[in-house]
Image (tube, rainbow, N blue to C red):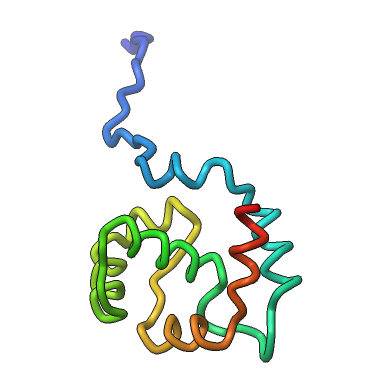
Length: 112
């Protein structure tokens, strides 16, 4: 004989927003993407986006990273957090190329 039992849902893994996530809240992703298109120069970016660059730079500033190699290793250790921020790992050479070739006006406009 089967009996109906009520089940309660237990959340096994809790997800909490980080301070980093809270810092990004005022920045609307659609506004960022619009500015990224507006201020893009050169060929289309293949393996990374300006959002990936922004997250990498912001994370490096907040964690006092000194070099591209240090930034890359920090990003690799934070992959699951990058996913929740809508970003992905970025190679050291790609980050260097984007930093060199793409204008900083995007960030000037973003924070005005």
